[in-house]
Length: 91
Image 1 (cartoon, rainbow, N blue to C red):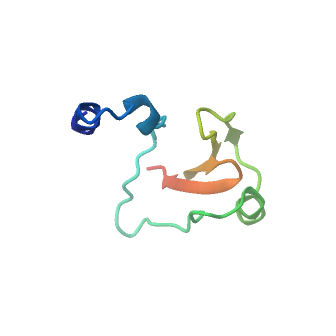
Image 2: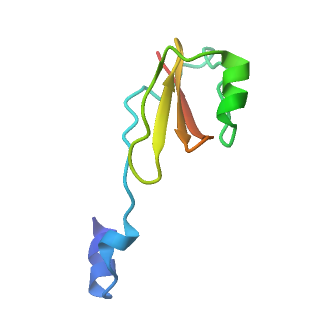
């Protein structure tokens, strides 16, 4: 919010600067000792599918850039187009 105020004072179009946000509802913190191998940032969907198999559930892309989710038993993978941008373990 402070950034928007500062940019507004300098005549910068705030809407052009701020991007869409995607909330990540899955618990991101994993207890020590329970950390597992998760898909890495930049990995392709095909590589994730080859390593972990078919996801239990997939969401349609939302927002700009399009963000989609693949839900597995123990984690969720977030994709921008065909590349992993984040993965989060479920508790």
